[in-house]
Length: 538
Image (cartoon, rainbow, N blue to C red; front, side, top):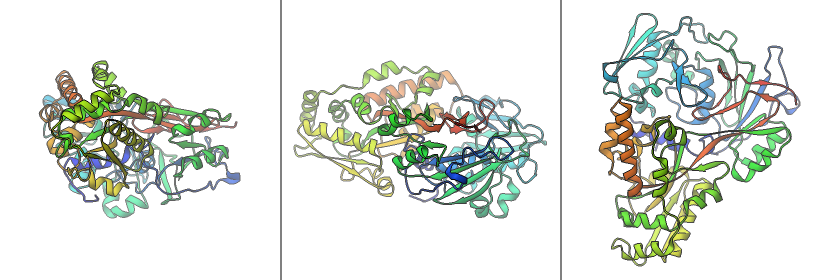
């Protein structure tokens, strides 16, 4: 699943891989200790104020060029090195960063004009120009990167003088403001050597500059003292170290090896809460975890069979057992922030989900001509304990209803190949997670349309295709809301997905760390107009 593509499904692969943990990342390899004197990097000031921060990620960054990177650990480092035209406030509202103000929107939502601030410069001293902006938004599509679909709706980009850029879209695209949060790169530097720019010498216009990186060991960034913007970072240095195993991450917090650790799992939540010299910083992330059905072939093509499976178990209880307190029950594809912001009918959607009723499930399964008497349902899950436990819960319910079920935990490569085959021999159901930008489009288009899910969504469900595409290609908020409301109500009643939960972006933070904030979209923030992390003493 490494083939590059310019079509819309490529971004889905990226977001699927992000949607794995409390901060949306997979737990893979690597563990490294602090190199700061005495084992605790947090206390050491450097005379410049703020001190040095050690942070434990759950996976090592892989690359740093925002044009091509597509995993969250890399983004967590890169987004401190590269700045953008727009960013998010402490919530999900888009606000200006390198831009002077919100864009001027014309031509019925097809034209966006952005004015850039004076004095913008990259870390090599070069000015940030409209040509750099144009290049940064065109390169992902021209180079057929897996980020291409974020910008494929752009028809043309035109510099307008020294500080303005005009974006002309192929169609009105309501969420385009979120696309404008992408990092800006210096065209001349990147074009000289793209590989070096990506992994050895990324140069941005952000508040931190790239220092060093050893894959699987650490990544280090330091304060850029000539940063064009405000505020300048308090921290002199941030060192990211990958620590896969959750208990080892917790131990590194307890021993002062790390000042911040990310992704607190349910079983360790109370341990972190009970630490005298640390606390949990948390915010609900921009994610969606769910059980999905093969609607292309096999017994689960019958909506009544899917409804019967909904009766086989209690999703509320499953989330309570295996996810809380690190996550919350979610009743639609939309994270709470989006649902609340748009005023979607969440109470109505909550009532569509069934409580457990084995007698009802058994009756519906027995009466379906799609279900053979000896049916052994295939449930595949990715390498994640929470989603495996959800799959096992479903399987146990089916067994109570008189049918067999097999839960197969696959590594990511095998899972990504299987869950899109549409073959009942590969799967009847699967569990997955997803992360996206704070707009309904990010949680609908990539699941429920033919043009996006033809090769990258294993449901093959087409019941709301037209409404989702119409909503995507409109800039009218009221029209989009109506289309999404009708579409998701139908999808939930058809039970192509059974929404399950959303996870918190959660961090264990030493008390000596001042100002560290979890963020729903960006995982966390270090230096903004509403917080600026520094190191103190305990």
